Image 1 (cartoon, protein in one colour):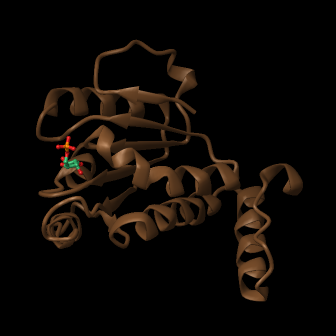
Image 2 (image 1 turned 30 degrees about the horizontal axis):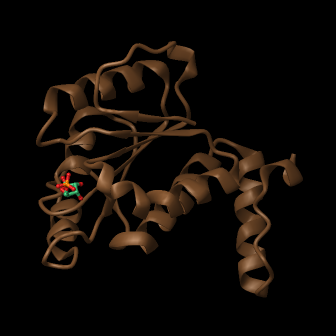
Length: 178
Ligand code: RP5
């Protein structure tokens, strides 16, 4: 995994992970820790980039093209205020996009929720809850989507669900399942 900023940086294409997380500001990263932890728990490779849809639109376009070409399977977009980032991601790629509305503004995240969830037909963003709960669920939803084509990951998702149902401490360490 790696944390990238919006500034241009060359990469080896094969180094692109399964999931690309993009957020609008460094101030969003603390809320996203729950998402990163869940992805790590399932053994899903990810990287996070800070690229604002409003402040760096051309950098965002270039990043999505690069990620698509390199085989990223799923994008997670997170932003607060007028949170257009997940929707712009969905406009730039045919891969699934999960949107996390963040709650940094004076409207408590309702502004971001409406911006992320109210996408026009044909440009879908799978929207999760506002803030840290949504960040964790973005990781879980990504795992469930990717598990459709990954039996080992599907097994880890079922282990998590069974542990959650029994009240036991969740066991989602991928090394235990492989
Ligand atoms: C959004 O504006 C970001 O995603 C962040 O949640 C919010 C505030 O950004 P900063 O002013 O902290 O950079 O674009």
